[in-house]
Length: 117
Length: 105
Image (tube, rainbow over all chains, first blue to last red; front, top):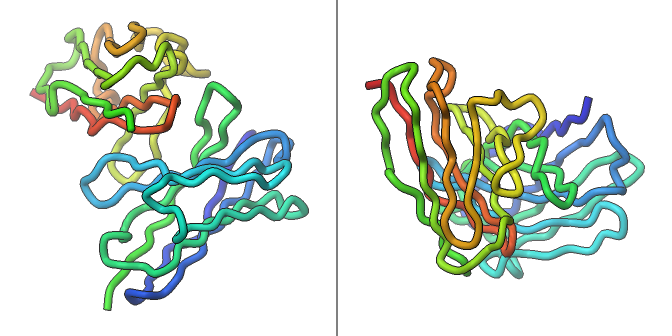
């Protein structure tokens, strides 16, 4: 079945970077985009951007522009999200999700990133 | 940025009741709207896309309607497993509502 499996929880100090991976299975990875969404504790979902898994093109939310980088490894069917210059407000669960043009589904299980000194 | 506003923030209901959740967009988004259900510690689950199309495997008690700026998610008869937070999401330029929590009365 179509599935996205994310890497495990991370703890970082302020100012550091973090990389979260999202491994896809059950479909042709390069035929769809992967979106990244985060959710801070008790907050609404927040869209970060997407990567075209086929050609590597990216679009970032203005809020994260300059601080976030999406990459993909087609040989491993894996998308990655790297966020730099971390601050406490970046503590959140980060999700990846497959976009087929009308549905953002499925979602990965989420990766908790904790930023604390 | 298109702002999505959901109402009410919290809804206290009994099992078996009919539930209506609202979502308003700050400008027209045509039918580019989805609804998600999220339970504690879980990823969001897609319920509705294109404002009114049920996603695969979603029970018929869930229905969506609306277009432009006003949207509704209806649960015809609330089941115990439906107590959760519901988010609307517009994919014109990608923003989410703040959520409506459906809790047991």
